[in-house]
Structure formats: structure tokens, C-alpha cells
Length: 356
Ligand code: F0G
Image 1 (tube, helix red, strand yellow):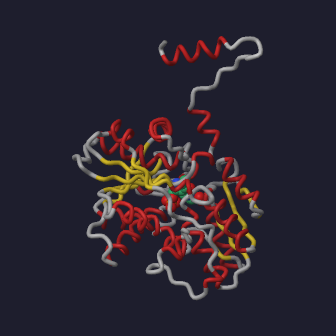
Image 2 (spheres, helix red, strand yellow; image 1 turned 90 degrees about the vertical axis):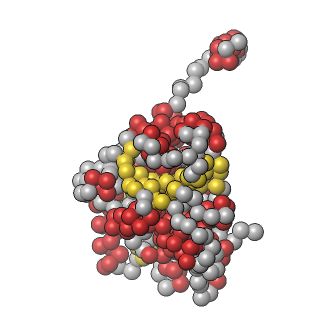
Image 3 (cartoon, protein in one colour; image 1 turned 135 degrees about the vertical axis):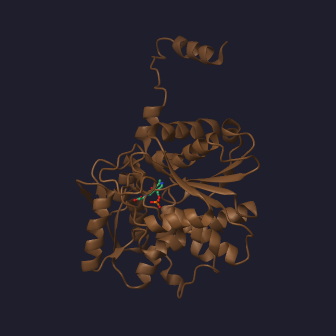
């Protein structure tokens, strides 16, 4: 049985006492080949989707949270706190529940997807909404965790990034080597940092011979790294990455530069198009922020970045079910009819769509 990332990678994760491990058996997510999507983008590339939506709380955050909460428990902490655009709070709430400790989550009012809020609430976290954005929420929780005995579990907690490296290990295990390019959305910039550290650790352990180029994508309205200055009022439909001053800004730049990669931005329209496309063409449902990775690959392909023959992995960071509102908004709306009266409207629709 898959034991969760800490026990699955004993070479990379040390623990003193097994009893302190808090796990929901996160990790081991599928690396799904996406040939139909590749066919649409560029038939000469091989595309894979690292579907992180299949983690226990529906996002990649669980990989970091198992580490951060385990270490908090080991240190005798009775509570964790985080700021979040939604997924971190869902994960922190679940892992705190699992550990039997308290969770406090601070979220930007009105700007988190419904499923994520539901998760934090049902797991019993104390949820505080701030009339501000993620960056302001992060300032608040940093201060509180400095002054009070609560453990900060945002990605500035180093254990978070250590845990998130495991996705890179799994990709290399799956492919037998590192991909040529690794595309992912960039928000607070922890994940791109963690993946890069993961690939380097795997190379240093002799498990892979080469490293990928890291290609990160921000949303146009929340692209501080691309523009080179913090964004006071970040705005994007991809609320998960609605961040104007990323905590791991410098580390993400280092990942970009050391790997020979890039960090660029994509528009909300491009994100939503990629979001709809991967769902419709591959049957893989992710949240809008996740689709920034695919939107980025589409953009870079048009610019001629890929010559053919490359293996490209896109991380799909969160499950589409977290954000039903956006899915419904970008889709064709259902038609109503009364089958008790006649089935003809339904039949006509079938004939119409199938061109019969
Ligand atoms: N994709 C999703 C679905 C996310 O939830 C996040 C970040 C990212 C991408 C960006 O990752 O911050 O490591 O660059 N969500 C955080 C949260 C900020 O609070 O849940 P990053």
C-alpha cells in the first residue's frame, strides 16, 4: 500500500518517530499522457499531466502539509495557522483535523473558490475572512505566528517545500528520467521552487542524469515576477494565484535561471481556454489556476520554444471540483424540457449535435 510521501521516499525524508507522522496518504498522483491535447498544441511534443487534484484534499498542498503538520506535532505545537487563496487552508484544516490540533485560516473575502471554503469549514478550522488580498492576509498570519504559539504552515515554512519536492521524484520515477520542460502555475512561487529542489536532489542522488527547464506562468493581472515589481491589487479569474508579492519570489527566479527556463504570464482568456480544452479533450478536470501551465505551453509553442521531440510535464495543481462556478460559467448551459410532456426536444438535440 502507498504509505504517503514521507515513508515512500525514506532517502529524502527523515523522521525520528513514526508516531509523529501525520498523513492522509498524499502523493502517488497519476502522470497522465495527454496525446489529444498535444495533437492540438503541437503533434511533435509529448505532453504529460501531473494530476495533483487527486491528492486527498484535491491539491498539491497536501505534499507539503504532511511534512509541516508532522513537524509541528513533533515539536509539540497545538495549532497551525496560514493565509490562503483556498487550497492551503483546505489542506491545513484537513491535516490539523487528522492530527487532532487546531487550525486557523485567513482568507481574502469573496475571492476563494466555494469548494475550498467548504473544505476548511467542514474540517473545523477557524476561518477568518479579511477585507484584503492574499498578500495582506500573509502579513497578518506572519505577525500572529511570531507573537503566539501557533505554527505557520504557509510555504515560508521550509518543511512545506521539502514535502512538495516529492512530486518531482514521482515524475522522474514515472518517466525514468526528468522531462525536458516542466510547466506550472506560479502564485506565491513555492511550488516552482520545490520542484526545482526536487529535481536537483534526485540528480544529486544519481537517480536522473539531466534536469528540466522550469517554465512558470503567472496570470497577467497578478504577474509581479514577470513585470519586476509587486502588484498592489492583483486580479485574475484564477483566484488560487491572485498574488501580488510572492514569498518565494527570489527562489523562483533562481529556479528559472539555474534551469535555463522562464517565467511568463498568460491572460485570463488564455487560462480559461486551456481550462476548458483539457477538460473537453482529455477528460481531466482541473481548476483555472492549474490550467495556466497548459496556457503557458500553448503560448510558448506559438512563439517557437519547442522544436519537436520534447517531453513536457504540466502540473495540474488542483481539482476542478473545487471551483464549480467557473466550470459552469465557461460551459454551454443546459437546456430544459419536460419529459412528461414529450421527449422530442431531447431527441432533436441529439440529432442536431450528431448531425443526423
Ligand atoms: N495552483 C493552485 C491550485 C494553487 O492553489 C496555488 C497556490 C498555485 C497554483 C500556486 O502555487 O503559490 O506555490 O506558486 N495556492 C496557495 C494557497 C497560495 O493559498 O492555496 P505557488
